[in-house]
Image 1 (cartoon, rainbow, N blue to C red):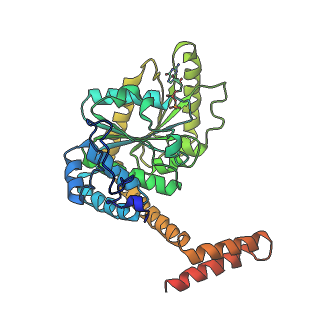
Image 2: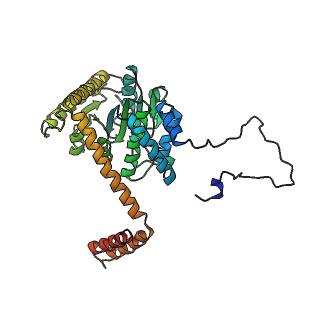
Image 3: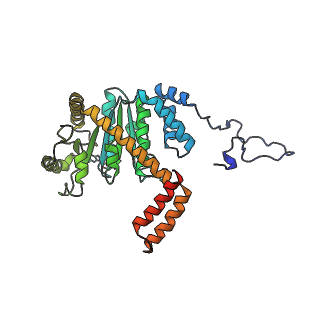
Length: 363
Ligand code: GDP
């Protein structure tokens, strides 16, 4: 933070006084200057106008670990909140290779043909910026990435799932304020991140592929239970029969599940993202879902429950970070962990000692 290079006056390499200033090697190159940070109202104004550069910069602010940026991002979000909420939020999950990027590309174009705008976000807690994010990478969605109505943003870089998820949820608010009326949130179907995505979308789509006859194996029941729709991709060529078989298996498996809170019966469809077959049918299903839950009031109810969930999550996340950022706690924690590992102290008394120290500082 206090590094001299972070100071605005820092000039990098300088020429000692008394030495003639050498000419610029390429006189046509303009000096690159860091753009000044917009104010909160400039951010909000830009976002509401749908200015993509402003939106991107605001998202970067949301993702920043700098506490000043965080505080500023919160102000921007607060001011954007009244303009948010008017989108259809669709979560998309599937194991790597299921065809998420291919499908999002065609689903996105299908939607954009109807008009409106689409933001594609991702939650992938395992990704790191430096290594390139697995999800949301623009090159994976070739057609969509050049469409003027699409805004594609990779997953916030690695961190706790709670942190990554919060950033994505805040980005949803900004995108909606910028007029994106369709939001896709993508995640890899391999871990806990589905729960996070499920808790911020209106419709949760599970992409599956027909495999070697063991379709229902390895699919966590929990993920299937969360899905509002299951779609089996790659129903093309020699694979059509296997895809239909998988469809039948999923349908019968879903019969065994308890009724959903929405009253909606999850549907199972087959399609081919690559050959663009059955895309309209998938979106007809999603349209039917929205009509259904808007009519029976569940749409509103689910959003309110999600708002409460995120309030609780935010409190939990901030308490945790306050606790683990306390230097005294950190040092005692290391000490007590060593004691527990050496079997010198029980986990309960060790936890009590650390918590007591923490609480004693804030009474
Ligand atoms: P992701 O990891 O879930 O994002 O999957 P990708 O979209 O990258 O697709 C993985 C592979 O499956 C790629 O080689 C795609 O070309 C292929 N693929 C995707 N959709 C289809 C499809 O509908 N049919 C066929 N045959 N292949 C597909």
